[in-house]
Image (cartoon, one colour):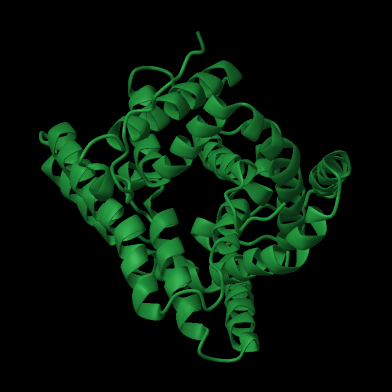
Length: 352
């Protein structure tokens, strides 16, 4: 397997990681803490996998992140602003509160901007890491680990009531979270250069079997020992070394499964592979729109803690957000709302 060429299995894993973000926001359920152990690290590690060291200049990186992440964030924020004004027009104080906290970001952000921090944190982390490439590699590792250590100290000070909030999370747009997240981007780079060449030498069956073990075994241990999960948006990274280690191991397991067996399947089923290729380019739209869909589901009555309502919320948000993304990407609004070039309608060829 050579991921310098398009690996549809890794594209499918990126789609899967976004789907798990939606599931995590749909509600809590038995075992949902196990989902939170790895779902956000998976999202950032996969981003690091494609952030090849020294491939772009800092200027090009800034331009790329501006087009692919920040412009969609600003465009969707304008849409969300109009929605908030329409919904909260009769409650001016409530409306202004949502608009202020939504645009400011940080702790106490408006629920209408539920997932916007993902894109901004990724953009700033990638730009900072690209800047740090001018120094020795250990500098980036030191800064990222220092960010994790500082975040852990802040959590401790919160727990003993010395701090009212987490300083990283309280910064506007949660900019402080970008520093510890660099750790996961670096992990993604290391996996690409060190782990994936080894996976390339394995048979599909062996790689998939090892991958399943690497996914299941750490989660069994996490459940047995009640290991705390990641809540990255709040600056919480679980137990030092242990929680991140579990997330990294699970991510490697998923990569082994998806980059081999799933990739082979998608290359055999051409149409399915084409659909995955389209879905992976809807990421910004899905991340920024699914929160609005979940809020709407709550408003119309699907707001109980039952497992049935949770999966209805998840199913509707998942299918609607991806459908909206696919449709938008075939319009001139693709660059502004999804950060990708406009695509042609998908053509399906039926053999005679």
